[in-house]
Each structure stands twice: as C-alpha cells, then as structure tokens.
Length: 224
Ligand SMILES: C[S@@+](CC[C@H](N)C(=O)[O-])C[C@H]1O[C@@H](n2cnc3c(N)ncnc32)[C@H](O)[C@@H]1O
Image (cartoon, rainbow, N blue to C red; front, side, top):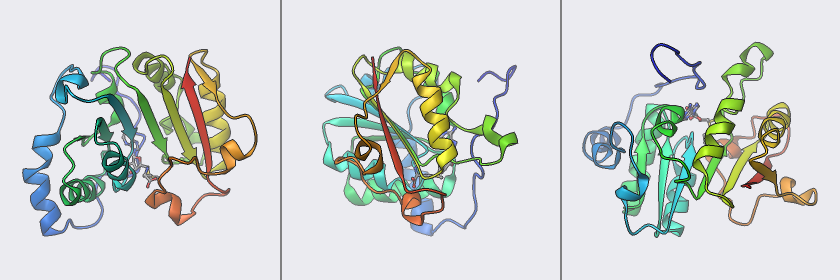
C-alpha cells in the first residue's frame, strides 16, 4: 500500500455520528496504549505470554472482538477498523471488560497486514464485510486475490480463516477467491456447516440487522 500505488478504499465511511464524551476520552487515553507500533512488528512482542495471535478485519463496534478476547484471555487479538465511531465503541467494550489482550489498528487492515511477518497468525476473521453490491464496486471488496495471498502469507499451517456474509453474491465471491488459492481448504462437509452459525461464533451487530439478501453464511477455511 505504498503512496506510489494507492489501493482502492474498501470501507464506505470513516465517521458519521458525534462520539460520546466518555468514548472520546478513551480514544485519547486508552487507544494510544493499545495501538500496534508503527512500522513492521512481530505481534508476539506485544504479548509474549500469548498462546495464539488472532486478527479480525473490520470489527465494526468491536462486540465480537471483545467477546472473543474475554473468552480467550491467553490469546492476543488484533482488530482493524477505520470507522472511528466503531473504534470508539470498541475501546469502550475493551475498557468495560478490562481486556488486556486486544490491540486496535484504527485504519485499513491491509496496511497493518503488510507490516506483519510471515506465519505470525493463528486465526483470522472477516465477518460481514462491506458488501459493495454494485458490479462496478466489486473491486472494493476486502476479499480480493491480493488479500487472500496476504492471508496465506500470514496464517500458520492449520490456522482457521472465517468469512461470514448475508449477501449471496459476496458468499460466492469469497468462496471462489479463497478456494482459488491452493493455500486454503474449505472445511464444510454438509450444508449445516455453512448455514448454521459455528459453535464458537458470536453474533455481530451488523449480522443482527439482517440487511443482506440471504441468511448469514459462515465459510470456515483452513490454511493448508
Ligand atoms: C458491514 S461492517 C461489519 C462490522 C462487523 N464485522 C459486524 O459484523 O458487525 C464492515 C466493517 O468493515 C470495515 N472495513 C472495511 N474495509 C476495511 C479495511 N480495509 N480494513 C479494516 N476494516 C475495514 C468497515 O469500516 C465496517 O465497519
């Protein structure tokens, strides 16, 4: 994502509503302490005792990220989200739950990913990404051949990658793009494996809105 080769924006907005004073205060105080360092970095150095490192792209209000972090205190979760109102909501969840195992990149996930070393991730989530339904906007979807290649570079062998969406065309798109890479295998064996929420899934705020054109679909892949 160098300035010489600007990449297309994958998010629709950066800021909309005014931010509540308490959240604004946390953006000033807590966020700088949980933001990953600038430049290339090894996530293990951020929490040396962590058993695993997970990445969530586009955490929205941060509900899934915070809940997973609470359930897995020995896992470091790095979340990425450029929408400042979402980041403000996430820092409130992190503060209220007293979570010390979350780091927040308040920007484009692709910019953070290119700063991470090969094979440093044990798991990744892309949950209900911006659907960009118009054909001319498909190139703005976060799932592209290049992002799949980055997941292949960053995820360890055997590491899971979860994609979820309630937009039928994006489900097909993700399946096509991710299985086109020999680095990923789709784990589904029967329809319920993609139709039913996985046992370890936590319902997201966007998922609850049911804005898509199909029931939520969950695609679990494994890095081969
Ligand atoms: C439709 S929302 C879903 C949010 C959340 N995952 C949920 O299910 O409630 C998609 C989110 O992805 C974020 N997003 C889009 N492009 C992104 C990128 N390149 N890096 C990180 N987040 C991104 C958007 O800002 C938006 O908040």
